[in-house]
Image (cartoon, rainbow over all chains, first blue to last red; front, side, top):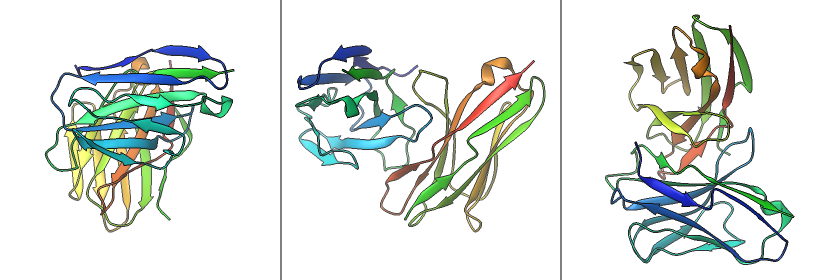
Length: 114
Length: 109
């Protein structure tokens, strides 16, 4: 069983609010990822990190930021939430041995912006 | 562009066999994953193929043909709990993971 945790699991907020989605893993994995997924659609990469103080932008990064101050922690922040941000957000991690490792996913944070 | 094609939805009967196909066009290839995702849950790893051929793991098998840009996931002795979406994902030459939209598998008694 994977040891990767996301909070909150569910969140309903108003437009314009700043929110942070938390993700923590206890497996010591170097690589961590944030994905956005709408029902029945593919996963879209938002941000990723190859280790402490490393962050990279994915396809949907323009409206969010991440930080990686500690190996185990990779929070995602939306500075000003909009209804278009309503979606499920999945955090994942993988061991740092190459780029072909299995991804371990958290249970997701389902965000609704009113 | 890069894309992964999978059928949107398939229906099968409990106890039967089903094959879910995945075709891909990517800039290079460094491996292909299959993940299972139950409704409202996170994806979980099923298989990884990097060489041509069939990988068998219990009731699930995954096949890869790199020359054809093609993979399939074979599920045998279907159980009701196999009702889920099955996601195909390819690692390209830049080690980016390209995801398909998934195939929703419905199992009927």
